[in-house]
Length: 317
Image 1 (cartoon, rainbow, N blue to C red):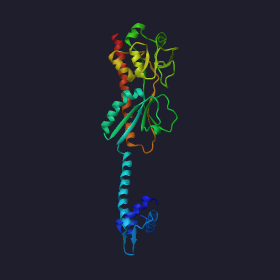
Image 2 (image 1 turned 90 degrees about the horizontal axis):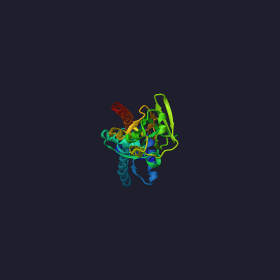
Image 3 (image 1 turned 30 degrees about the vertical axis):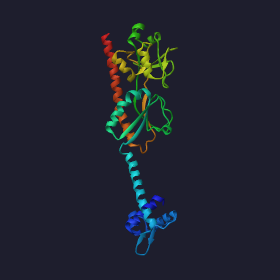
Image 4 (image 1 turned 180 degrees about the vertical axis):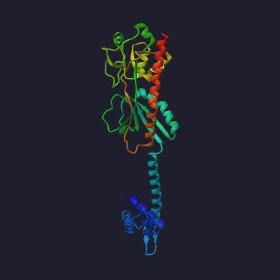
């Protein structure tokens, strides 16, 4: 038996005053109880119990050991209860990684909703384009936007698909003309969003007739952050691909217009990635459940708003 098992049996012997009663409570034999106490005394190199044919009593060392053993086992039980409770009740700190644009625009309201449901959980959100190393960096979950997941032993739940649309400023379109067909893009300045999942110098555009690839030889500006590209597009530098959530504030304010509303760049998938499917911590499980519930609704709402804004602009022209 290990030390904790022997310690537990020792406490039962002391509390019941009998090896026989201790054996009955533990559903083992009396010789097994006697052997466990002997192992404990041998390991400690001290006698814990005085034994006679009629009764047992604690030695001075046994009394001190009994008091410490009771305290130790209560801590063990408390730790086990807390660990088991972590699979049932969300509590503690949740460290979240999210891809930059998605994390900035979608995660704060989702985390606010999560805190309303589970106030015993504190959260730390870190935004970065790269997928993190969970073990080395100590993340509980990553919300990644990517076209293809790298090979990994991690668990990945797909929770939605983002869309990227082409946008330009009203001033740019007034100067350079309206884009009515994909072929018209050849006469325009194309700004590029340099993300791992977007091909260099190519825009694979999904439209009514399937995917049409627009290729451009050069661009005056490329950047790896959609928010920075939105600033360049709004300043009139050219036409650029923007995630819907990044484009929406400018579309609402009239600083941006959607180009080719019937087309959008091939979308990237959104994944909730975590370490293991077995014994998932309650705070991770409940966040994944919220993401599955809320993200598709938020994406659908934004896609609908973009369509309404574009249709309203067409009517007013």
